Length: 361
Image (cartoon, rainbow, N blue to C red; front, side, top):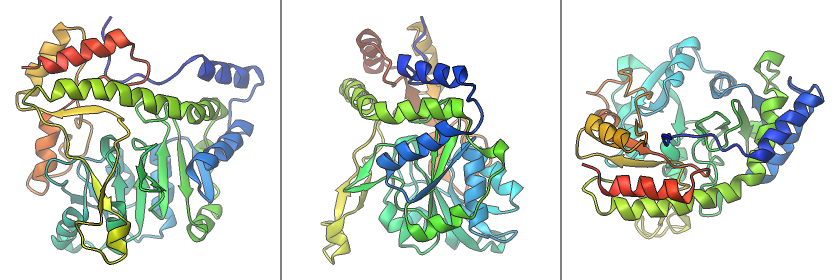
């Protein structure tokens, strides 16, 4: 059997929760969605939350809440998912594409500042949407200090901590996707929440249509996902450790470890003294290839293991973000491969993938 790159983390508990909702004829937005909001609050410590049908709807609602005017600019990473561009187009907003830092999947203050300094067609930047690409969280305290409203997308970084602060707790609004390829795989949907009371008051004023709200079937599955998250994160860590040992024996590169401005920097210490590492949540196992993507994918296929291009469906990978404006992101979109990593992998499957990584061409 082929080992796929992604697989939703669904076990008997999730199936039982969905069947219970179906037996009780609770499939539309209702009690399970309210329960999910309560359970999620315990884990995310937000002030207010909306449970919606998709991350695209969540982004639409978040941007609408900022009262941006037609033609104003929104800074986004060139490695953001393609739907970002569609949502901005529907709202008549202009994307300002930011490149990523060298060897990194994320944007930072330097790349954001460089994107704003280009002054694309006279577009005025009014907010930043920070997608935690592949689960890698950038220096959020520093990005917030740029002075623009920040929307965080922590769909792939759930479980990551920056010191004592959670990924997703820095922005004005935060999106936590529940799609098949997010950290919490509830079959679809998203939470849009605000940590601070002032920002939460804006969300309280929204009244999404019933067709925009999360159905109870997805909510029931998401409730279990939150409860099982700690175990799933630990399993991901164990698998990633096995892969890393293999990757160190190849010529292919891993992404640089992310850092953020820690307490020492905030208290007036030196910049270097205030930098602290951000522990990765092992959402995925990407490698920046030194050989061709097609060669690696063909080699893996012979071993019955799927390997995917990490950024094929990103703005840079689809050609929406110009290679001239974002050369680092464009290069990564051609050379970054993803290998299977999810909690349901068996020990035998993990060993098989680790051996593949170690013997890559």
